Amino acid sequence: MSRALSLVVASACFFGLVGAGLLAPDHLSAGSMEVAYKGPAEVFPFGTDARGRPLTEYAQQGARVIVLPALVAGAAVAFAAVLGGLLRCVGSARVDSVIQAFSELVGSLPRMVVILVVALLIPSTWRSLLPLGLAWAVLGSPGAMDEAAAVAERLGGARFVEALKAHGFSWSRIYLYHIVALNLRPVVVRQASETIVQVTFLEISLSYLSAQKNQSSFTHPDNIQSWAALLADGYRSLVTSQPSGHALVLGLVLVGLVTLMARGFTVAARAR
Image (tube, rainbow, N blue to C red; front, side, top):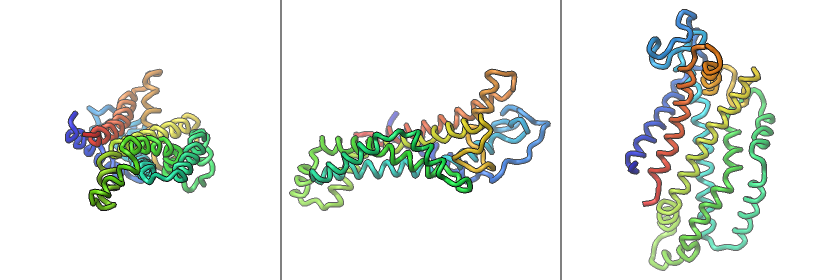
């Protein structure tokens, strides 16, 4: 797929998910038992759940839960990658030592244990995916910084900067254009995109486990439904006669849209 087409597809997925989140209702509608478990052909566009409530509201509320925290986490990892690449171009042994110590310390922490500790420390009235997403971004930043630093090192590091300075380029053109925009861009965008997908799967996993235990989720208040509710309800159609297969399909399609968006941005930002 060309870079231009990838950007168009990824942007369409992005604005679709953002729009769904902005239009999400605060509460699910009352529904009607007369249209319970109706498929998309009977209740457009995605069908209904066991109480006759449209699955569109589940999709919108799930997007509301995920989109903003995932984007913030992706931006945090992207910033860490840019920082790691630029610091490698400074050519300071002391800075490299500090970055290495940070990477070893944070990289040695077990991610899921830290995430669960953060989730337990969050007051029940502040349930949100955002702090969990930021914690995941901090734990994933050492890998992004190391990869960006390796790219900057292959580029020449401090020698590359000195060479461009000798040609009369300004610091903004050297660091922001030649280093970040031209050379670090593929790494930064890919790391940010992968973080968005990881945070999405993190939210679905935590919400799915909470739903199986009939407990409140760590990632959203009780009046909001996650995409995990679609997957949990739809999975029952595989092991029982419950006619909720359309919910499973919708949940998988939504996850696929996030993955497609991340892949599209990664391809659009690849090196020329």
